[in-house]
Picture: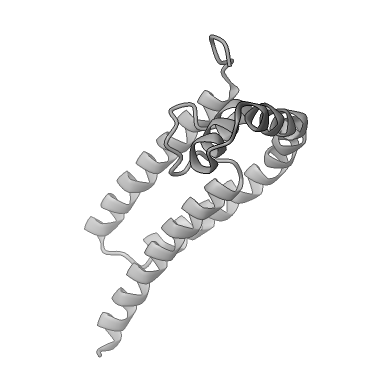
Length: 135
């Protein structure tokens, strides 16, 4: 394998790893990730997700929702502390990856990152908007 091919392979692998790490981090930090519910965030969405996946009874669902609601302010506080650090690290990773790419790949990488950032911003906005209707 030539040095150029190896560098290109490593860059692609790093890009994939960053993409996966970002997805996993988002999920671990409260992102809706692959949850099947449109709301995707907050006590109601988490309780609905677990109700769906674990077939919770109404009593269990209400208890689980109360647990999530009780800890929601703490989770939000932790996320508000961690989010700037994650954003800063993400910017460093994107810059280092971009340095490994061709000009055409950098353009596509920038478009991909903008799309992901748009999705992240929409999720943040959706998570701060009050839900309507009974839950």
